[in-house]
Length: 606
Image (cartoon, rainbow, N blue to C red; front, side, top):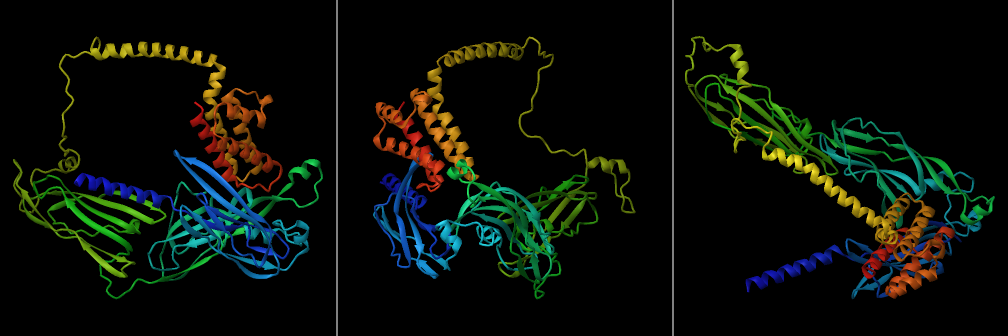
């Protein structure tokens, strides 16, 4: 009974975890949220699942030029297949003003979801907007591209808090937002963070582009620099802006000068200086009320502990006394404690060990001070408690922690000389004291490695094993080389075996082009990957490769009809995207569909 109950609970928890890990998301995005009267813009509703029923909003303030255009894609990740559905519109505003596009409604898996709303700003009709037929501009009417580029490529300074106390940590992040293709960049000015103690955060994701929606518009964003700052004085401290010199590639709207330009379009590179905003941090001074006398400036959330390895020793035997600080805050600025040891103890400078990490959550870790203490006289001595005070900004008060006080019992050593009348020790030289720091070693535990007397390596068992290893290795290498030659002789078989590996390698290259916003190269690599996969997998020469040949071979090898349609659909999408930029599927959807189709064919055709 108990076993059945336990398995039942486990099943329920697993089901709940699966549902939480795959939550449906229904979002609305636009390619821009500021247009002029007569210009066109694209509105897309996306669901990360299959849709059962879609109910679009009422576009009373806009003219619907196209839509809803439905698109469905499938992808395979870690053996799990997922799908997504999108509905897109091409809209044109009727009049100027501020408008809100209502939410759309969709049903999936028996549940109903609503998207977010989007605010659209419609300005007066421009002559250039009429000429371009509503396409997104990158140049203003006066020929200066600066204003339009600034709306589509900019830097933001984001801080975790604008109100702090002196010494409290805050996170400052410089982030770039872009919808354009950046072909070159260089940091022009980096702020000096005057008034702050700064620590740079180095993460693996720094510099990697990620999608982010800002006011309904999707941008590619990347963290340029992230810092942990601790203000060192009270008052207003300004974080200066950073600036970057960018080279941005945009479409050249001038009349094309060649047939190639007319077909594919022409581009030009423009230099643009992106400057972030500045932020003022209001820093409050540490409260003077209730400030302990031993406060040394530690701000954060800390713990302190003290340990000692022994409390009973003989004269001139060493004792290890450790003090450890751990927590989050300006732990690097914690000063060494003032210790009061008995005058009969000789104390060496502490050995310091630190394990401190700087991350997006701040500076945290531990700092250890290890003291070597040598009692010189017999008797009972006290090591008093060590006190540590810090200010906790979350609790907004001073906190004090104390270590334990220790009593050390020092015994008379065997053969030790008597104490001299002047308090010194007879027969103890400076050389003896120096050796005490080196001749005390910890007892090694475990089984020692012993060797028989008159043992010779030559002729031993280990000697002959080492002699035979190269001979056996050479023989195995010969067999492996022979097998490789046999496999290479079968050219067709080798191409079939390597078909998937070659296709995945090309898809990886296509993903790099996608992340670099190189659309033509991306679609060309996807097209080559799918054609090359079918050619290698089914032994079709590239000269005979066509959609009809691909379809016949897939049917011949019993590939399911939906997979064949998806394969041909992606090929058509790549051809259209290479010659006509207005593709129905987005680049991530094309990449995910290509990867999923190859995995499905591999599962069906062995």
